[in-house]
Image (cartoon, rainbow, N blue to C red; front, side, top):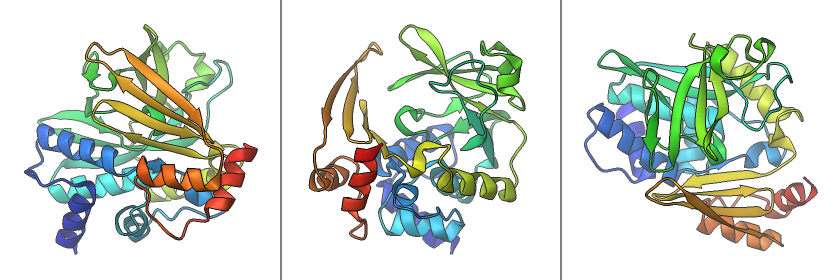
Length: 286
């Protein structure tokens, strides 16, 4: 069963290289994953509840060639890492601070990312943070990590520039360089999360109106030199230069048919069971 899953997963992301759990190989697998499997919230936007059981994730992201949000991406990637032989693979919950007003209090733990160990050092691997998914393997103890699609770093939560009440239960803050300064993305609790904690957080995220996923549409996928995102009906294609600068082109989609075609062509979503008329109405109303 494990061999079949790993074979199907690697085929799904188009990876045929070496599978020894080295940092280089894990980085290559992560890159293939983020360029083949999109971030998308079609299930909650369509009125469904996301299934994050191992089989449920495999069915949607691998067999139906769909995407998913953080709980699905992290569940799939962590399973693959563990079966490849990576050490100390754990899923951790985090609080999202990206574009959140300081002083708003601590947000709920609605993000999931994966940690693993290599040669005694801890690394974070994330394939499901939407339009700002880190485009590389991030060591927890390095001052900053420069990737093809941005520069990232971790700081202690107390050094993130937020009131103490905003970061309750948060150990490390992941930041990205944006516009010449460091922006908070999400905070991570370094204690691993129990499967029951992940199940509760996923249920809240896929059913509540408080996170954006039941009442809006969010797509994202990475390319070798850029990020492609859809925020409701606004399509953005951002391209990064070698010096780290970037430029973005935007347009607004105007029909369910156009949304379906963009989903297929740019986000590689091929599932014929999606009700694009319903999804378009959710995006248009957001």
